[in-house]
Image (cartoon, rainbow, N blue to C red):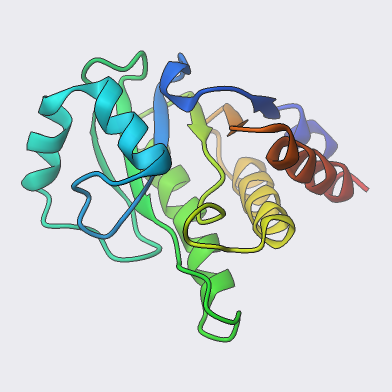
Length: 175
């Protein structure tokens, strides 16, 4: 596991500026853009992204679909609707784990060596940050441990509070 940790980094930054093979979009189920990360990715990628998303027919929570990156530095955008937090008793944790797994599997399928993730579901979907960070880190490390691609995964945090939560989860996973 300690070797796997070297293939996973937590950074603070803007996901739309990441020069990785793919970036992940914390999308809604329509895939037609929205607020937060989703809106920012659509704005930077340009109108062609929305056009391609229109042809995908939406995406179920916990699943993932891939498009070109268009005007983004990333070659691909992997869209996943994370779960909306209700009370933790409606399968939210399993759905969040599924979002990460499906994004990583899709990235591997198209040959991505590097992938950047945002913190899925912790914004307007209100998933508790520390719980989401633990699920994300454990899922990503487990995937990296069992697959040759992607070779490098970045958790791109929008602010210091989010970065601290993911760094703590990563430290805990390394113990």
